[in-house]
Image (tube, rainbow, N blue to C red; front, side, top):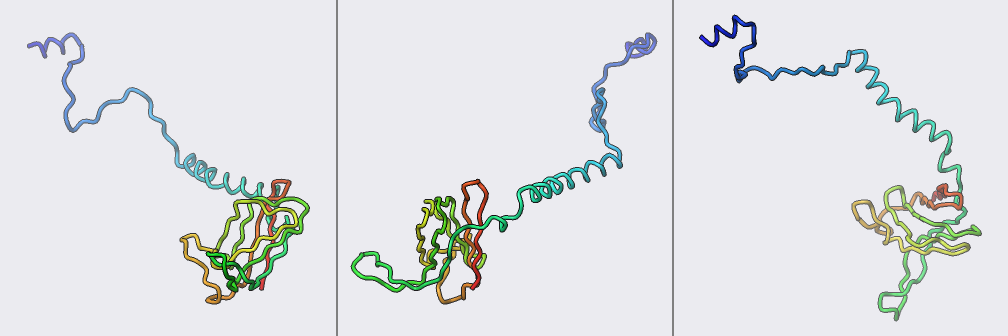
Length: 170
């Protein structure tokens, strides 16, 4: 009788929601038309592309900033671990021709084997590195004589903050 009485007074009946019913939402839900979605996706794709293009035009290519160094491949005697004798080692020699220190020096053999120099290369200084010290990103060491060295890429930070690049091909 109470159910009929509530219908007669035009008041809503309070009943628990059924399991198969989704909850009612009273807030408006945001929606995006297909045109709006297409424009949003195009904007998301084109914005990074446009920013990188503008950056490349403004900053220029890294090869435009030459690094004043000389690169040689040599074989010189280096002291052994105990310091009593010397062994002939295959090395890469990087000599600074600049009148300033070169920070953040990296040397790259054949685009695959890398070496990062923590300390700056002093003005007029020489960096002598054993070829066996170079390693890939997965820490596989370069074995001198197994593969020929085709190119050496040396990068470093110039006083202006730009990255200077020197590429030597052999």
